[in-house]
Length: 568
Image (cartoon, rainbow, N blue to C red; front, side, top):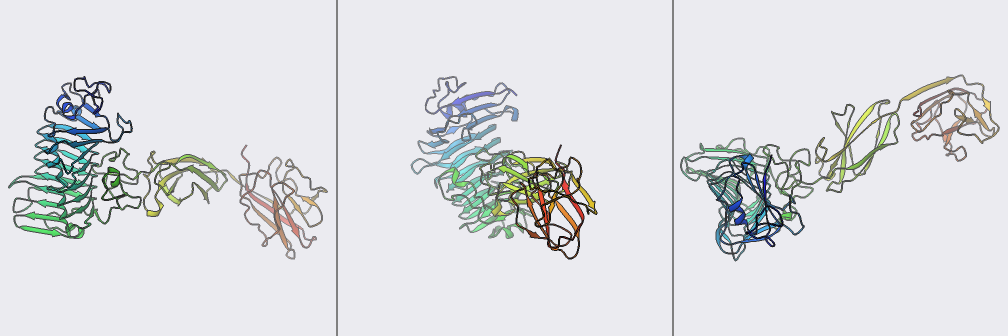
């Protein structure tokens, strides 16, 4: 789809420019809002260079509207490097004088505001909200950072429909709430709210007989000093409310209530999540939500990065995919784990790379990979025999893994996922190419051969036996080498085995075994139990064994090998 693009630069821009290129960028947010005309029926993208923007009274987005999602107007602060990533920081907006709002969106439609930092200061503060959306429809606010500096409400939606706020962080408000939803239809998903003087979120129908439709998913609500969530009806009941709330993380952290419910009949204070889950007016709400510390990386800090989640956070893999965005507030893809994380941050796993399979035998092999360098502390391994249906195999903190007990002549597929092993269940996204490495291999064919009644041995007079000779060499102490008859012309016992060697001999003999990969340097003698050697797990391409009998008159009656032939 064709689109229109404009650019804004707070340092080098000029409102007399066309705005059509970075070199001819506009200078101010207000000028961009007044001139981003979607008249062509296509999307309009207005890109803001990173830097500090100071506005006077406020910015009014009241000149143009989109007509639908194909004609939406996007105001994109380049926080995540969408177009203008020159490493100078965020797109930060502050007031140079007191005003009601920093951004005002009245009676417009199909506008997206993405990637801005809006900060109130002690000297110049918004009296109502950092962003006020009033009687506007299909407005999306995403990937923003709002700090009211204990002055005002963070974001306010009033009297509109189909509005969305997602992947945003709202801290330090002392207005009506961190987020105020008044008689509006709004979806609130994957946001982080911290340190609200009154409520993290306030939902109200504003007046008698008015409706409110609210969806709350995957939000962190921490430290609302009165309550984390307040629901207010001006009617005698909540018949005009539609609320869907789930997979949220509640943490009072000094707040009196988790949820406060108010109508004309009185107030119900839910001091625990369990109490709220049993509310008589709002049934089946937040049944998959949690009440515990979300473990923000630096709660109480002043920057956006302070509100990422720690690697041990209970928010990891605890969200829902319903209405969830495809990336987080930092531009990283969602989900990274087996499902979505709660809050504005998606904990970042990095896919292992350079996966290889080596040491391939008929019943075991070695997987190896390289760490992707994310927050993972280990890897979880899944295995399949059809390449489609994978089952969990094991986990490891190493970048290699030996898989044993396999079937011979069988193709196996492996997927290795980055994981935070300390948290137990957390694992990077199952079968997602962004976070796993997939390997496949076919094991070797296992061969069994048995040789009976080996009574006639060909004596060798020299220990200088070359690789070209066929078969294993057996010896009695002090008598030199004894060679078996040819095992199978042209067959060498090779690197793909393990070997299982079985002997039958007289009952009076002590039977010892040693082995060599060179024919000159031998392992220590090992006493064998009657009839069977241990499994020799690491044979190489050239491999010999020797046997010592305490009674040299005892003849070896049977000799059998269970091994894997060398690949042709």
